[in-house]
Length: 372
Ligand code: NAI
Ligand code: MG
Image (tube, rainbow, N blue to C red; front, side, top):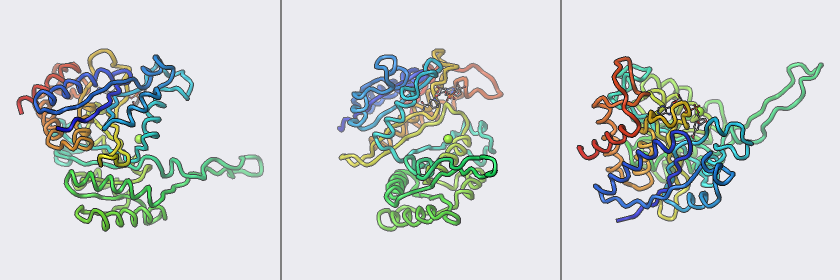
């Protein structure tokens, strides 16, 4: 039996509250499924600043580099808003992403049947939706040079200022994120749709050619299609279930993943992962985290929905520990609890009812694991 190592970084605000529920889930898998996970816990964000005077201690960074996976809660809060930029809580998160070189950002959009009426789209369009957007995270127009604002808007030079950003990708950067997408597709429905604007951008032509090259040479078993990103946006709201894995660049991915997220409802439901290069054991470096922040407005009140963090752990089971059956089981348990009408405050619809607490939601999910 393999022992997996997991570094838990609860962080600030509701981070520790939702992480406590993940701990219950981990405990259930250890007790009932013989899973062996070596869990360690450390500080990040404001919590780390309070202790070390910086949002991520060097020892914590070293631990993150050594483990099979990192699971992070959330960072930040009003208490830290006036800190110097260099020690702000989110710098801790950014340091993890940068030093682990996490270039593939995974944002699933999964619609649980019981919540289909939460979507802004019709139930029949989103029910059963299960797509995964893979966004390149370390390059592209957010980083390309040259960049900046040039020329003064001085008298006589009216309208002469120039704002410049450069969309720049190397073939290596495209290939590595394409490989991530194909690997993920193999563990899902086996289909990748790559999105760019090859019709108007040379970087898009390179993107298309390189993704095709990786497919033809390394992943011919996966079905590959290409789509212009603007059409992709339309297709995402018209018929999102046509997609399995979508791979795209940093800018298009930023926008498309936020749009896709809202197909499914509450922020309290959305997990994410960021993957890097394969380690010696063949699995990628990885950090998992809910999409939401530290929610200071509800922190400490037992109101937070722990599902986003629990589903982030399900992604960890699937992609870092190669335990697809366990990940499926956990997602089914979440689905069952929702189907039974159990709701945290953020999931209360017009029908009303009494919300459960963070801890009660965790207990229901653990009970559902035992019942399935
Ligand atoms: P937020 O995601 O923390 O909250 C937005 C709204 O959604 C709030 O009304 C909150 O109560 C609600 N919400 C979020 N997660 C929820 C959950 N699990 N259950 C129920 N309701 C939930 O975003 P906001 O308010 O913009 O930022 C608050 C703090 O979090 C800031 O300090 C910000 O910098 C930080 N932040 C951290 C992130 C991270 O750690 N990755 C991401 C986004 C924000
Ligand atoms: Mg965004």
